[in-house]
Amino acid sequence: MKKLTNVNSIKNTYAKRILSNVIDKNPLKIFAKTPHDLKRLTDGLSRKQLWTPRGKGMWSIAQIVSHLCDAEIALSYRLRMAIAQSGSALQAYDQDTWAAALYYEKADCMQQVNLFSVLRVANASLLKHLSPKEWQHYGMHQERGKETVERMVQMLAGHDINHLRQIKTIRKNLLAKHR
Image (tube, helix red, strand yellow):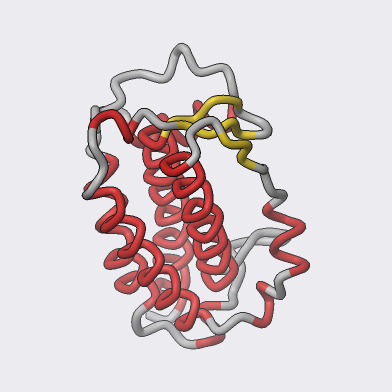
């Protein structure tokens, strides 16, 4: 897998923003390290802290973790479709609709961290076996068009960085209040 060196040619604003997080970084290392980082950032926080949003109308750490878990579930399916049936349609999803309909506000945060970790380890294991040609297999994303397996991993690594930053900020603010 190649490192991404710039995002200037990317038309989709969301993809450009997320991919900018992995410029000159190894997406596979980020991909593999995220479960550890997520456990470290949630460790030692009380239920109340996990559920404190960073601001009005914004998600709490627990809700971000549920979102990461659902993104991993979606990625799991998308990767498998692209690898096994290159050219398959990849449906988009509305994160806010999923958050409301899938009871993010009631989810057990640590159970979600564990589920995310299991899914991510399974996906990382699958990726280790891919040939260079299989990294270029692709799906047709409903909103972003053609996405190779390589691009999907880059996107999720950038997505990880984005949300881990949010969690770090919330954690830092919560711990500063308790000093």
